[in-house]
Length: 414
Image: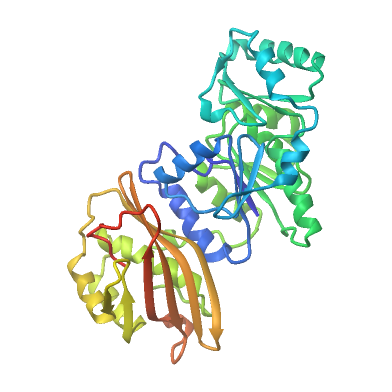
């Protein structure tokens, strides 16, 4: 299980090409999605979390922890954890928090979207933070509350129930998964700021502070965990630091398919439908960006891996033969050259339906600049009459627009 903060940890806001997170995406979908859990743990409210998903090439997590560990939701529908809500209600009263914080003019209320049932959020100047936290804590205790005050990012002050926080939310998940017999073999916690420190205090958790970690987190580490070999400070920024930590702790494969210069040199010794899907869409991105050095070689490979009788049903409901698809592919080489065009796949789930056939379901997304498009995709892949090193044969692909995607997109391809 990977439990990662988002802003400046999984998501690098100083990387306009989003390469760091895209490298992670390809690795996760190719090697981990089928038997691992991805958890996003963010200070963002649901509103700001959903906004970030529209802006950046993010995967869909299995579990989302939001609002600094005060909200836990599951799956695509983001179903709330009612048990967690009941737990947080102990010695918490949002009305009293509002009354007491109004007595501190140094506190500036954050936007309405950031005020949640179990979280009150403010801005405060760095030089005033410690004094305010001390005095505010005393006043809330006198009112009978048991709260936690977290300062992070050099300006954000969050007031939560004492039982809340990213670390407690992770401990709660561990306990719940253990009771269900589903506790992961390893957990890797990833963060960059003060509100991530708690993640590294959970027993048996591996931790990575990304290279760009803030001073407050590095100071916490120096004071509390400098001799803990399970927590490292990465040499790489953001998601690249997460990939580095996977390798450092020997948790599994840590070579992203995006790091392979030639996607034809896979040399697999077993059939791997998830990897085949990731590899194909990486190729498609490179093809449209004119980054394929031997186009003819790749075309010949596609002709070999696409069944001659195969069919593609595009999101507009139009049926095409794979021969027609390859013909169109020739015409679109380099049509995204010089543009901030990226392709990624999300929630790749293969199911073997007979001895040599796989049904693979996934979302295919692309982004040019700030605009994202997404469609649900179902593919049938076959291993009949081929070796693992040759790759699986694509027999059928069917796509349907995801609600909210640009259904009149004329440049959509596969």
